Length: 89
Image 1: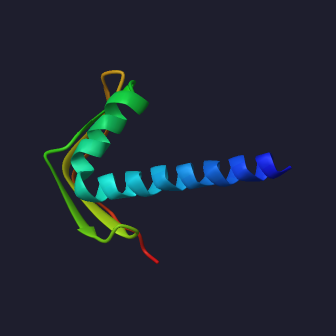
Image 2 (image 1 turned 180 degrees about the vertical axis):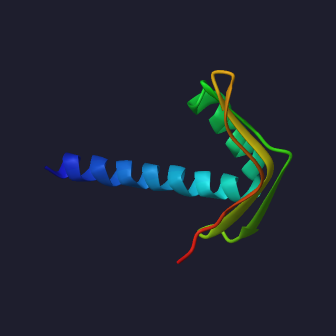
Image 3 (image 1 turned 45 degrees about the horizontal axis):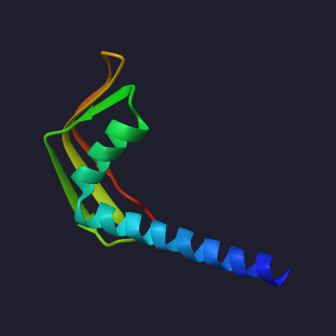
């Protein structure tokens, strides 16, 4: 029983570090993180944008995309000049 508790505490600790590292990377390098997600996690979709502005803090990020174009299997799904993705409390 002690081993199960010990391993679950270590697992939760590792997962929390991965979560905070991903939030930190998204805050510092939002365009690179989105391009990596586009390339590795969503291979059938293509996300292109000309500029990305990141305002806010690590827990409340406000992303603003300019000239965003999302395609799936060479078909256009979304094409917008300006898209603001903000967290509203």
